[in-house]
View 1 (cartoon, rainbow, N blue to C red):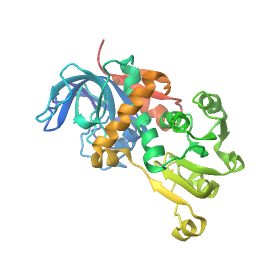
View 2: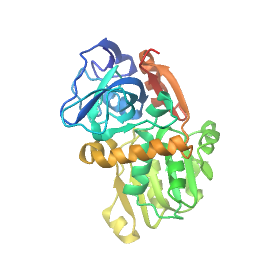
View 3: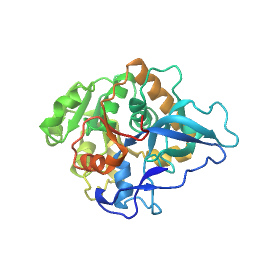
View 4: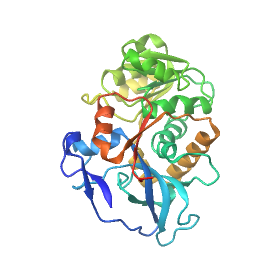
Length: 320
């Protein structure tokens, strides 16, 4: 089958379209004929070698498609069924066939969702609900700040906050060109990252940027506020946070990593995916999707790592 592989760590230029063996599902798994694969910053980290993966490696943490085969012990799914799935635990989504835990698969029966949109939901949209509900434990009426508000997960966090009953929802972006794009995703206000200090206090801050944004976000937390750290897109050095400062100011800092969470709690990650699919199908959750071909994976990576995206990029795998 065709697949994009990482034969060596490096720039986007290392990505290669190869022929690899078709994977077979193990116990508790399904294999999926992939229609579309989402493109994410996580796959760039794999490609750069930030995450230790065996080479050659097939990236791809989310897909849409149809169930190809069921592994031993799998119930509730059937061959040919349209699905969206998280493939983040073992990756492999940039391919014509991928395997994943059946718990991380959401059937699309009865939903009016195209395969391109369905591939855009498993990572960012499920993450948005998990981060705000499970980690930040958002309460109705609380004020929320989201960094990188025009990006893939940022575009979903603002909307999920609104669905979960947030009060004021503010997005921060890195350039003026992204302000209008972020506003389209339901934020009450959108501010430049360099000007966020004037935006007031927040009960919940979600930071995937790191560096000065992380340090500044801690200062913006109200008493009993919670900051969720879920990335370091800036590539800045790690930010040290004093436990004594948290103690004296009644603040909390938590981390969230979707791959580790999905491996440890697959059923809960799967429920979040089901929730995201239902919200997108009902129109409560909007995703701006742009499609490229599988062989354009390097182009997708370059756009993501240079910040030239708003919404979500997906790769068309199946030749329709």
